Image (cartoon, rainbow, N blue to C red):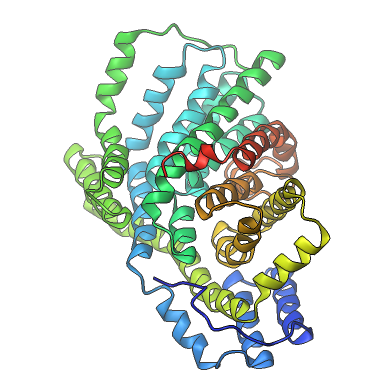
Length: 436
């Protein structure tokens, strides 16, 4: 297991030899240079200018950091989500969600959010959920009465559950970086993830009642619901296999992801919704997504290790606690950092860079590592829809052609409701640590 804290203490003082490489990374980010390139330049610059660790560490850490069994789960979960969409099983999950929630006045909107939650239980990715669910539900949302920008904001918000409801790629990565079992994090994240999903549903219900968007509403029939459950039985098998296997100890998260891929492919082939000629496209699509995530992890790990050797986390903690020792202010400061970071950058580099720096600060005010992980990942999730730079806003804009700013304005109430849940998680540790 790669552990950032198994590093000898360094006596290097922080100065321009540390600041310049980090400023360079920020400049490269602003110039839209690929994230992994910027992180690589920053790591090499720190090693050369500070000489805190030998430069040969860079090449070694680059490969040893990603040579871990836990990371195999990431491409497997991505592939599972892609197979789910191409085989039509995602549509079955949405049909079940509509049969469950469709009788409400805001039924289809609420069903869409529930469908995002179902998809999150399988794909573990928010961007994948935003694209997949948005492609299926956007036209129908507009048809039942939602304005186009609001429909986009609703899907973008619901898709935030992709990194919040287990299994989640974000929890696999933060577990890898901090040396925590992904299974433990999955169990701890179950209640917070559902709380976020319910908060988005309730926000849609309130807004729909106030503005009169959705005029549909079908009577709930238990027989219809049972039929939807039966039709979606194979789709429902996948989250049961993943979560059931992990929580009962039958599978590790990586093994569960492998079983899910094989099961989903087998169902698609047996039902005739998936053909052998679909496999190259699925593999190519999943490889492209994985090709974005893994290089970021590879180049961020040596940077994080160098920062740890330079005692940047300790210096950061001393600076903050020297300014204030009020836990409330420190939690609010961390929340602001996480949301701002989530707006402008993917979850992966945020976790690898920020978690080793912020964890000592969180522990200084009494947070344990599980509570911190849940708080951090959930806060980053809020950043995905925070105007004007939230990632999911751009995904839905690209999918539908709607203006990012128009979608962002409609997303503001959802940001507010998610923030309420995040603050509850921050100040009520039992919501995250109940399973410990």
